[in-house]
Image 1 (cartoon, rainbow, N blue to C red):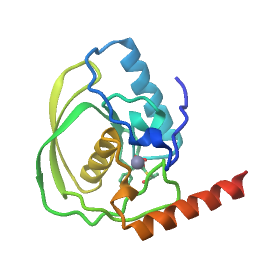
Image 2: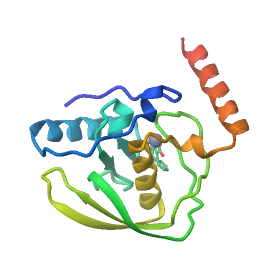
Image 3: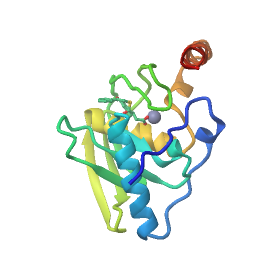
Amino acid sequence: MAILNILRYPDARLNKLAAPVTVFDASLKQLVQDMTETMYAAPGVGLAATQVDVHKQVIVVDVSDRRDSLITLVNPQIVDAHGDSDIEEGCLSVPGIYDTVPRAERVKVRAYDVNGKLFTLEAQGLLAVCIQHEMDHLQGKVFVEYLSQLKQTRVRARLAKQLRKSA
Ligand code: K1U
Ligand code: ZN
């Protein structure tokens, strides 16, 4: 197991499109284990492979308080969506920035598990928002890119200040 480096916005690698997984092998299981360890250590409630510079359609999510309800989604597809969510989002690639962006309140997702078994998941609330957030990462989209240009400029300035302080 390993803790992986999480890319920080505005790194251009966060804008790469992830490819579907075609082979469900030991290296996929290793990637999922490493992403899981990285998400729990951060700590976060989700992580997309894009954030660790692996451009494959792989997501891990655990929104439970006890941190014992891991969900792995490979090649996820939203097949149904309803309602509007007002849940505030954070992102491990954009530390310290929180905002709301347009998301469905409930989603039905079809995905493969790490063994290549197809399953369907119905999610609502934070789990639904988190899955949509992570699926955006796989499309190369970071949640702050939904915000106004003014807000994005402020986000970049705050992140640059954080970096200067930590240097
Ligand atoms: O994609 C990511 O960077 C992970 C992100 C997921 C997310 C959170 C909230 C709404 C939508 C998507 C995070 O996990 S940010 C950290 C966070 O929210 C959190 C961390 C520890 C405990 C509880 C929440
Ligand atoms: Zn994120």
